[in-house]
Length: 117
Image (cartoon, rainbow, N blue to C red):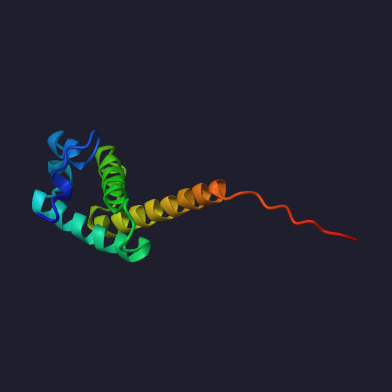
């Protein structure tokens, strides 16, 4: 198992989708999902850094969005699942960075620059 990431039973996470039958629809086994978790984890650690505490959350969010779209059968080309998951993961990383940037700017004190003429 890849760090045991996919064995956690988050509400609405990948395990809920596996148990609901989406696993059969997308032809993915639990081993495939564990491999996806590991690959996503490496990608996210590369982009967010090793000290990021939210890596597991970003992995779970990426997979849950991926499976949610799979459940709705909105993926047109089933041969391109890896590429689609890559795009989903990239979007989640960008949203995370944006959210963290807004949180950092909100926590900084406002400095007014006094201009004298």
